[in-house]
View 1 (tube, rainbow, N blue to C red):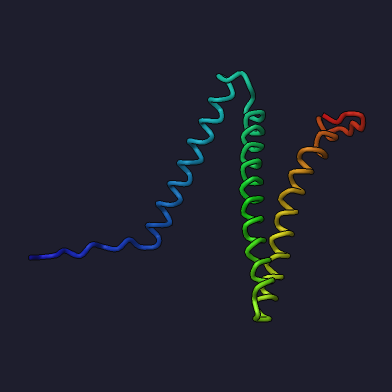
View 2 (tube, rainbow, N blue to C red):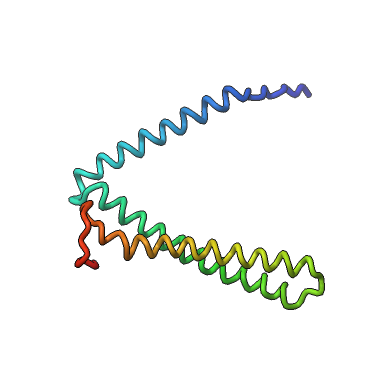
Amino acid sequence: MYLRKVPRLKAKTIMRLADQLSFSCLLIGTTMLSAGATSGGTTVWAKASEIMQDVYTQIVSISTITAVVCASVALLLMNFSKNGRTVDDSRAWLKRIIITWAILNGLGFIMAYITPFFAGGTWTPGTTS
């Protein structure tokens, strides 16, 4: 039986296909955003803001659950390990987990409570909503 060799794609061909695919996705996304602005009654920016808030809420909830699970594993390793290196590594990972979780929630605090003060590009100290 004769087996024909399948030609390999060259790196230039793969990169060209990837560029064409990304450009096509950009065009489709832009077209969808511009079409959505006229038909929905809301602006593109309001819808994008709503989507970003939803995505951020999902990321924070997933990161909180992940941080709790990883921190509990690190604490278990710190408490029950007899190896000094494992304890040091667990302590380092625990610090990384806490710092990353604090940064993610700090961004949420800034977006929820600080940015309304600057609504419309002007400082409005009496407005909190």
